[in-house]
Structure formats: C-alpha cells, structure tokens
Length: 125
Image 1 (cartoon, one colour):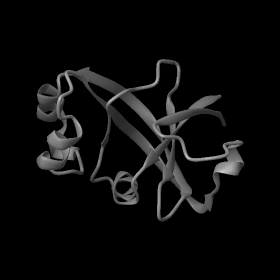
Image 2 (spheres, helix red, strand yellow; image 1 turned 180 degrees about the vertical axis):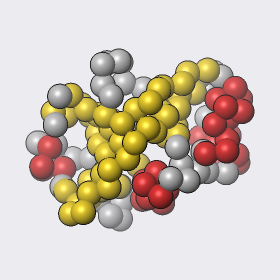
Image 3 (tube, helix red, strand yellow; image 1 turned 30 degrees about the horizontal axis):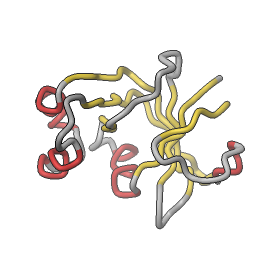
Image 4 (cartoon, helix red, strand yellow; image 1 turned 90 degrees about the vertical axis):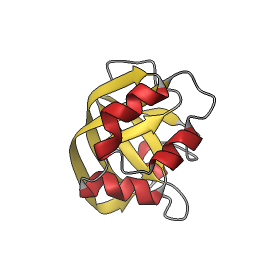
C-alpha cells in the first residue's frame, strides 16, 4: 500500500499523537488521492519516524477559510499559521483520523528513503 512520508517539526509531530493537533497544514499537497496513510518523520533534532496516521480528509481553501475550519485543533498559534501561509491564495489541511505511535521509532532507511523529504515522499508500507 502506498503512503506518504511527511517531515514534521518534533513539537507538532508529538501534538498529533497527543491528540491536540488534528490538522497538518501544507502549502502543497500530494496529487495521489488514493493515499490514505501518512508516515510521520519527526525532523531535526529527533530525525526519526515516530508513527503514522490515517487521513480523514484533505481540506483545500483560502488560508482564512481553512483557519476558521481548523483553529480549534490546529495545534499552532494563529500568528504562526498566518506567517506560514503569508502571500498564499491556497492552503491545505490534512485532517488526522486515527493515529498509531510506534513503540520503537524507525529510521528513513526502513522505508528505503535516503534523506528527509522537503515536503513529502511516497513510500510503500
């Protein structure tokens, strides 16, 4: 099954598994709509794959409209959000369904990936 490996800052990655962040925001999103699973790579300084989540939906709209729909479970401040999408006409929010945090962290090599993706990478799971 194809999944998407996303690089996420550690503070935000852990909020996903704690349940306080139910949306992962992106400026661009993967084109393959058949993908239903995200593998979470916690970026520097951790640099480990820490878990996965199922995709409930991918929202696409103006940054303002996406913020209105997601702010209660964004896991970030509006200031951070506004800065991230500054100058953008479109925003994407990947809605987290169920999560699974790995007991033992994995490496990128476990997914045949050489280096952390800038935005995402397709992987087989």
